[in-house]
Length: 114
Image 1 (cartoon, rainbow, N blue to C red):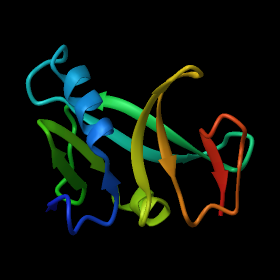
Image 2 (spheres, rainbow, N blue to C red):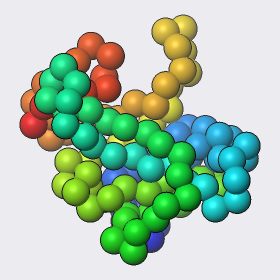
Image 3 (spheres, rainbow, N blue to C red):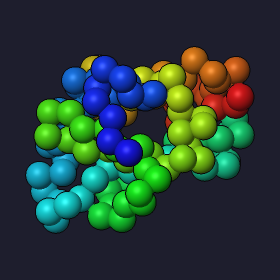
Image 4 (tube, one colour):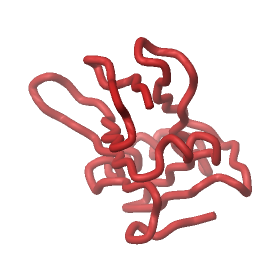
C-alpha cells in the first residue's frame, strides 16, 4: 500500500527523504530502505534500517523526493504516528525516529519501550 506524504500513518521528513534518496543512488535499481522494529535494545524494542529489494504487498510504502521507504505491518503497529527524520549536526549524522507512543527510550535513541 503506497501512501502519499500527507495521509501517511508515518511521516518521512524532507531531510530524511533526501538522505534516503542519496543513499539509494549507490544501490542497485529497485532498492528501498526498510525501517522495522525488532525486540531488543536497552529499552525493549529497537529500530532497524536495512537496504533491500524485498517488498511485500502488505508493506506500507512511503515515497518522497525520489526516496522509497517500506515498513512491514507488524512494525507499523509500533511506528504509527512517528516521524522519521535525518539529523546532521555537531553530534553526528543519523536517522531519528520521534515516537509519541514510546514511554521510554535509550540515550542514543535507537531503542524504546511502549
